[in-house]
Image 1 (cartoon, one colour):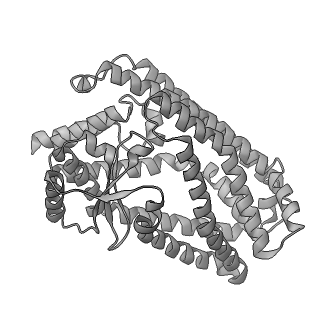
Image 2: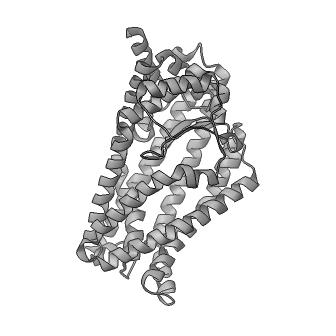
Image 3: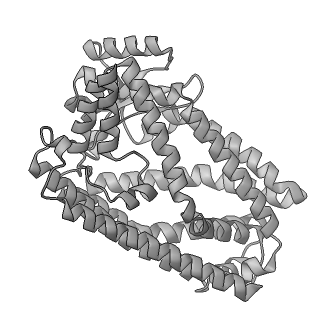
Amino acid sequence: MTENFTLFFLCILSLTVLTRLWLKLRHIRHVAAHRTRVPAEFTERITPASHEKAASYTIDRSKAAMLATVVEAAVLLAFTLGGGLAWLHEFWSAHLDGIAYGLAMILGVMLISAVIDLPLSLYSQFVIEARHGFNRMTPALFVSDLVKQTLLGLAIGAPVIAVVLWLMSAMGNLWWLWVWLFWSAFNLLVLFVYPTWIAPLFNKFTPLPDGEMKTRIEALLKRCGFRSSGLFVMDGSKRSSHGNAYFTGFGNNKRIVFFDTLLERLSPAEIEAVLAHELGHFRKRHIVQRIVLMFTVSLAFLWLLGQLIDASWFYAGLGVPAQSTALALILFFLVVPVFLFPLTPLSSQFSRQHEFEADAYAAEHASADDLVHALVKLYDDNASTLTPDPLHSLFHDSHPPAAQRIGRLQHQETSA
């Protein structure tokens, strides 16, 4: 059983890595083949220079993603069949036991993974983003963010991990249900406190000033029956020139946040249309659906881990001769993404359908034409490719391709 599982794991890992690399290579070739010609439906809105910039940016990011895929696979093999986890177990079990041992194991794996990932993050931020004119982050701000994220992760993550490990050891065969209840409650709490307690640690949020913009937005919120705890502008420009808008929070603690870069580039009518799209996610209950899906999937995963936690072949098949609750958690969450990769298109399709529905809602409560103009500006400003490879898009794009999305909106505007 052990050897069969090891062979199965290696086959699935190889297939997943090769498929991901093949999809990226297809994407690079497809974008490169179309880089000199703007799609007909965008010729009046996107310049050839902007189109070529988007192609170059997409290709650079895709090449970096290919490197990250190889590194991730190498790290996974090093931790498992390469003996990394076995070595960490021998080291920490000789000095600690119980929850302290479990914390040391899990935090150790997280630290090693973060250190390995750091050069890739630096390259992405200070080479790729800078090369294409998007980076505004200084090295000092990067270090500041890293320190804050690390300290915050320890302050919140360590107690959460400790509670999970305690539940796993104290709640008998139904530990997975108790862990799921705790994990679900914790996530809801984070959604509630994030806007006012966590987000301000990294960005400055100021109330949206009075004027035409605020008047239009408040009228839209009233038409849509949406209550928020405030309209805020975030200083996203200190890190990047990319623009965005989003909802954050849960229950009565919902905020609407606009990047300052977005407000600089879009007109009040276009911002109203973008916000109507975001309100569509709320009104169509997409956020609730995603939370329910997340909780359902996490319950299924924890149940599955409950079936594997005492299976010696699960540990030995992944190169770990010992068994413990901490090792079970680490191994499970290291290898689960490998086995779930074939389901990626389903997740992407689920998300793309939500985007279409939110667009349709925006067309009903604002102007479809204004949303089209806003989207084209955002595609242009963010250097988003207008010519993605269809198969790559099927797997990886959470938003519909630009041509499909804008085509639907234009049809709605014509038939309105």
